[in-house]
Image 1 (tube, rainbow, N blue to C red):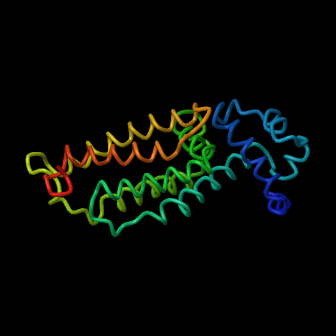
Image 2 (image 1 turned 120 degrees about the vertical axis):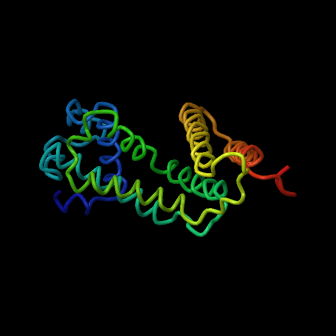
Image 3 (image 1 turned 90 degrees about the vertical axis):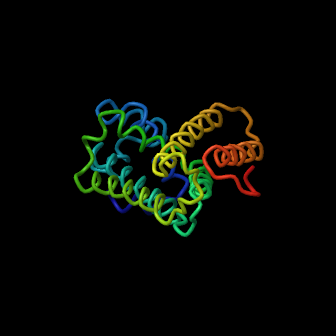
Length: 212
């Protein structure tokens, strides 16, 4: 990547990044068109190839960009000290949602890597970084959990697995609603999210004064 790209004003640089993220996400690496990217970014093709040697270099730049956001803004900020599994998921969910609002195209790009041909064009080092990120996420998620909170009639690992499945489905539903919504009342979404987690506690946790 030409250093001149880093010297661009942030607004112009982000416009190019967003146009490229959108194109690779929607079409995959092989079908992605630099013509579409420059049209969306409102720059010349010659200028794009002045910044990046070719489509592959641009793609790898985007992958590194996505990795950096996930690592610095999400993985490094996950709270390992929380011992209540659902509370840990709540904090992780809030953090992820706030990042998603600012970097929706990045999350879509990462998801598309596993659904299209793009994954094959990642370098070996990048694949390892993505895999290590997943391992680190799971380590932080499952570390330091107080399993005594769970009901005794089901294995604790199965309970955590079921809770994770429930939350993944819920997150997808809410994400789809937000993407398609004309107007968004975030307060209602947060209230619904917290209520959902409280219901999970009623289902999977032992009864306490706070959980009846």
